[in-house]
Length: 172
Image (cartoon, rainbow, N blue to C red):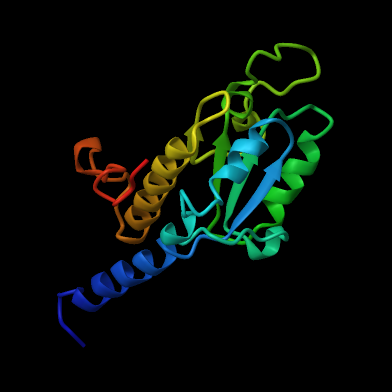
């Protein structure tokens, strides 16, 4: 209908990407002390709702972002994998805290050394515990990744092109 131009498809993909990146329904999988810092991001001072991630969902079937927060034991790993499999596509996973990312200082037989051995991870937020500002920065990077996927790009923009907390209007 439009010849060789794919103008309509490109504009529609950009609109869908924009809508999807500002409507993130998160499922918190909280197991340890990082949960306290995770809850701090929901306070009005940090206002994650302006990024479209304000209300958590407590059913994996209604969520598209899985926040894994805290230490994961080998006994808990099958439950985490099942929750991930219950999520609908597209889905993203955020590893919150150093214990989730690498196992942290719990280097023993019972601890999973990073959840990327169980499920694919899209974003790592290291720290013990990570500050809410890092969580907001990670959320913006995840939004850039979601937008890039819908625009047909494989990777998000270069680091120099990403928004900073200051540019987004965030103040401490």
